[in-house]
Length: 230
Image (cartoon, rainbow, N blue to C red; front, top):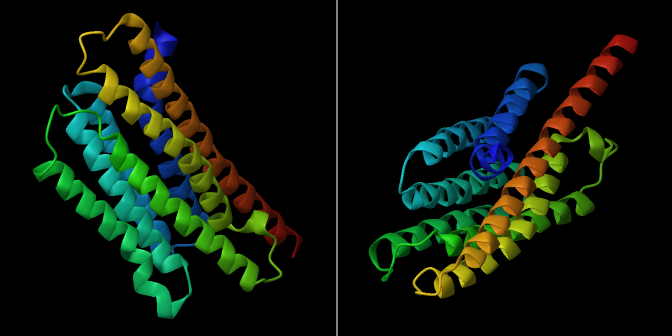
């Protein structure tokens, strides 16, 4: 039971805390670019909201805040990361789409207030597209620095892996909750399926945030070795 509680409730704030510490460590050791400061604010706010999710019931509104925070913050990160000046403002389109969907969900959506799965699906689609734009930029602007020493490469890879998985999980979660939760046939087996989906998401979130920490440790360690040998 304790393991299930850890995975279902505590793994989310722990994941955000890991990335927050990792990026703060990177800022102190290597760089203080504005896009990294945006990520620090994102993971700090995300950690605080996830802590509230553990203790507040109902918490569906808090999850709406989380997908809104992700869509806006990560879009801003890509806005400063990507170099295509003529397409710069199009990079903020995912943030605009996320805000529009959030407002629609809050003021126009009808029916029982369920977990905002489609909000997460919308954010995942947008951020997957931005990740591929970044990889296209890497291919067209090749430099001598190995990619494994590039924090942005580590971060966008973790972002892509997470959102590819989250897209499938939350799309399935949305379909199941719409069919199961309003129904009188919501059984123990139905609850188990939803719990397993949720736990799979949280494990995926933890692993991909751990990738960020591993990337930061690798980069900082190699930089210190280079400085020592020079």
